[in-house]
Length: 163
Image (cartoon, rainbow, N blue to C red; front, top):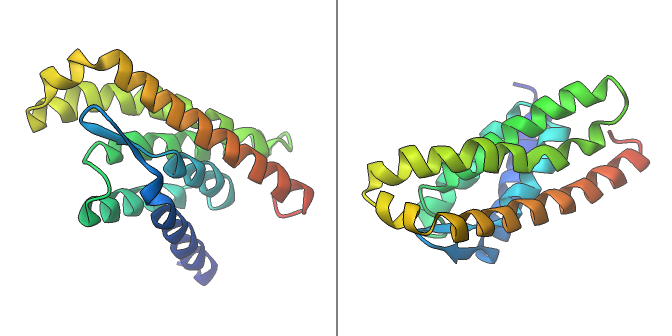
């Protein structure tokens, strides 16, 4: 692994952990816009390594008691979609738009995984399904806010010639 990638992994993971207290409870989950922000920027800057960043932030937040197990399906799919979108958009010189695709991963892939796989395994399936709409709205607010912030950072990086 290249040293630059290791440095980016450390910086993005550290940034995500520094922002971790800014999460808010939504049913049995915790919504964390900072995770979606980091996913958006990391997916554009370091590509597939953004998945490792999402995993590490989720893992360490859980270990510190700042998150729940729902952090994994709530973050990793978003990073995946941003990386794939950045890869596709880079061909057209538009990779800075990739963070706007983060909600597709979080809400389109991660939310169903959380609702139909993780919640039943944890024994909170009924509680999750009962609050499905409020939880979805909380997750949507979190991911949309974080991805818009990441988009503005990606635009700034593009203008600086770093993308």
